[in-house]
Image (cartoon, rainbow, N blue to C red; front, top):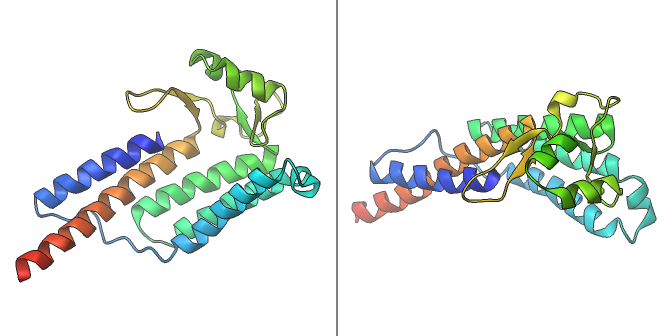
Length: 190
């Protein structure tokens, strides 16, 4: 869904430029350093965990911390797109912190035909996700909604994932309309 949000955001932003309008307010990029730090922490931990026992043992805490750092970075942005993405990241972070992994509904994976993901999660070969069960805390926030589009393959997503995608859509539309509109105004001023 994030891919679709980005692509649709670019389209809307270009349409707004064509109509000589700016979508929402000008996005600021400074806060992305904080969000990028959280993303880097997550990626490094994910890649290094198989060979570093300490990271493997504490991966769930690192995963939740990385999501919260990304959420703070987005919420610092004060742009509607950032705020929605920040709330989505925080919701995902809460679920991961409470459950140790992002719980996924097995029925949803079967519904979209992703038997491979179900097998990997069931066998415990995935650090980031686990199967939801009766003991899952805040189960309504886990990966449970099926999503399919013509752009990407079918996926199971959470409410937080949906907010992240909506936030990306708004941010990308705003950034595209601002950046391309600004370029056009400078050309017309000469």
